[in-house]
Image (cartoon, one colour):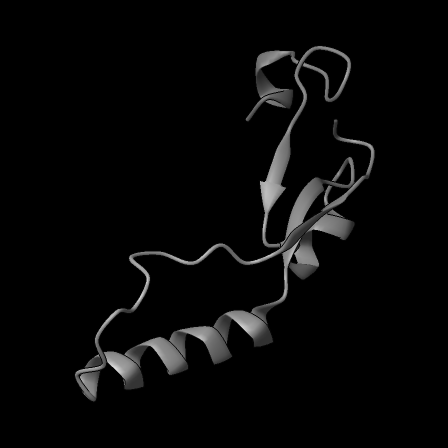
Amino acid sequence: MLHAQGRRVPQDVAVIGFDDSVFAATATPPLTTIRQDVEELGRTMTWRLLAELAGEAGLPPSLLLPTSLVKRTSA
């Protein structure tokens, strides 16, 4: 869409994605993205769901999982 409007990435507009899907590396230009470990996300979500279903008290209201920046040419 940006290309169709005459915008150049990254010269005119920087673009950053999230989750580092397989399409990020094959996009034109390759997409800079934030990566998070989906296995860790799944384990954490499962733990949290089971803890809530078991009625565990004192669960944190939110959790922050680690992420990393994957630099490619879109930003």
